[in-house]
Amino acid sequence: MKLSRWQRLSGHFTTITSHKLKVTGLCFKLGLYKQGILHDLSKYSWVEFSSGVKYYQGHRSPIDAEKENLGYSLGWLHHKGRNKHHWDYWVDKNRDGIFPIKMPYNYLLENVCDRIAACKTYQKDNYSDKSAYEYFINGTDRLYMHPESAIELERLLKIIAENGLDEGFNIIKKEQRTE
Ligand SMILES: [Zn+2]
Image 1 (tube, protein in one colour):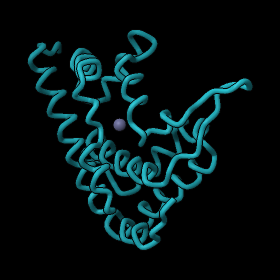
Image 2 (image 1 turned 60 degrees about the horizontal axis):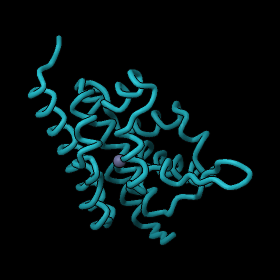
Image 3 (image 1 turned 90 degrees about the vertical axis):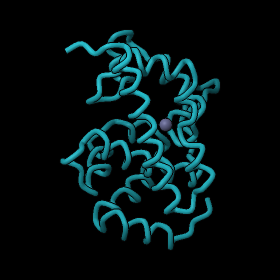
Image 4 (image 1 turned 120 degrees about the vertical axis):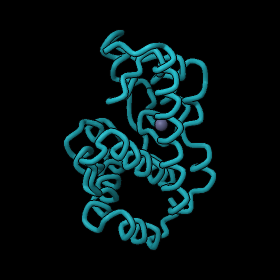
């Protein structure tokens, strides 16, 4: 079924806004107030919003659809260059080549919130508090990000998988790490 431009526009707007509100709520639980409010604001910029509307499908991220069509996503390139909660932001280059940088802890926590919210959106009834951990373990991100960030992210997601979201967040908050 082909969606009209209006359906794609309203669908995309609803998806990114409800995702943002979910992440805001999760970030607030961890005490990340500023990050919770600013999370993913660049999705409302012209480059990201128009690519999101053009490739809106509803059941998966428009970025994946854009990558399939063009081989790359302009929306994603814009997004990851501005949002520090993505490991892809923390990639640099020197004479030896491209290398990942260790992510600051507060952005790693925001990434945890982002992953949980995305799993809830796309997995719907199949979502469980193990979803984000399983998605990370089965995915390839951990092969490209800084190894220490990958180990720490896996540890955080595992705490949530094993203890449930509420108790998991309590444990993470009690650790009170600052870096
Ligand atoms: Zn993001």
